Image (tube, rainbow, N blue to C red; front, side):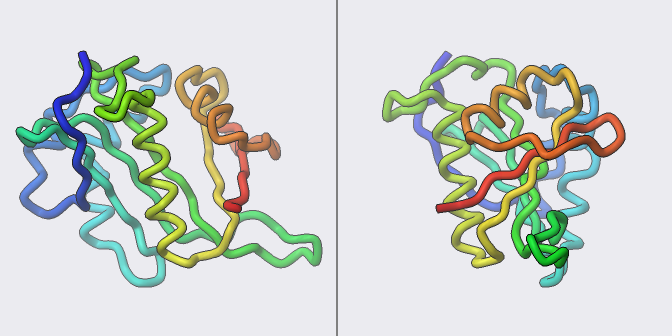
Length: 167
């Protein structure tokens, strides 16, 4: 099913019940739990230092289509050994009923959501480095890193660490 319209906005305190009922299937069981239980509190308690942004993508009628989150981060060492400023792309979640859908402009829904989120990341002027952590074997996450042409750097616990640079 394709969404009817596609708007985006930042989450607010009034979105708790909307997020608590959000359903998204993923090969990483942490994803849906984080969106339902932790994402809003993290966003609402964000400071200028971490600058966490929780974006909600919705149909014209307000039904939630997808959720993304990103924050300021300094995790990748530069050539001189110093951390590079940039962003940590925390999560991309598409509601089950909209998986494999197209956005109103005809492009794949996941591409539209990724493009909008990357535009928001660019607007924060944090730096060009974007880090993504994907649970090893999470085919949805691996597909997203492939779409973004992100490079695998290594592992951190059970997650593969990817990096991309905004151009």
